[in-house]
Image (cartoon, rainbow, N blue to C red; front, side):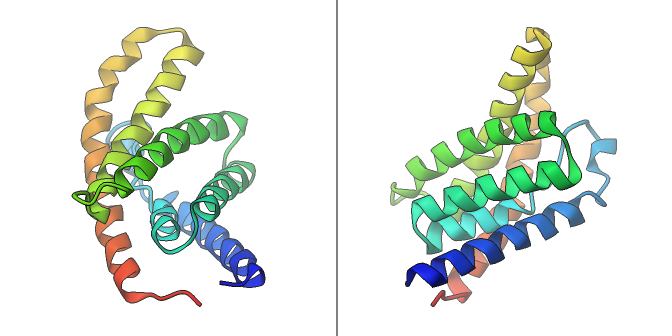
Length: 163
């Protein structure tokens, strides 16, 4: 893939991630439990991780998080999202190399690790370790969200060719 195409895809995927983030603001899952989201924008990250270079997927993820925080959130939301992204991207990069992990398995693990990263930041920022008890709910929601993202991502990865 040429450099110009990679740059164009990065821009398109960041924009698509922003649109999915915005759409997700209309899904009232936080009424069930605070902080729970489907993570639709992560479909773009998972797709990029499998169809583009690793650095492209990281760039797309970071670009989307920063722009999403500026447009729809705050500095605090950016910190929580970046922590979650760091943990989820790290686990995705490791598990993707293991042949027995499918896109679905990688996505589920990433959903759980994203929530773990956010809880660790919350415990640090709030100086309250008892927030760790909320991790059980977030692990379950991470598995559900990771499954939704993984199924959609796998279908896209199998059907869409870049170039």
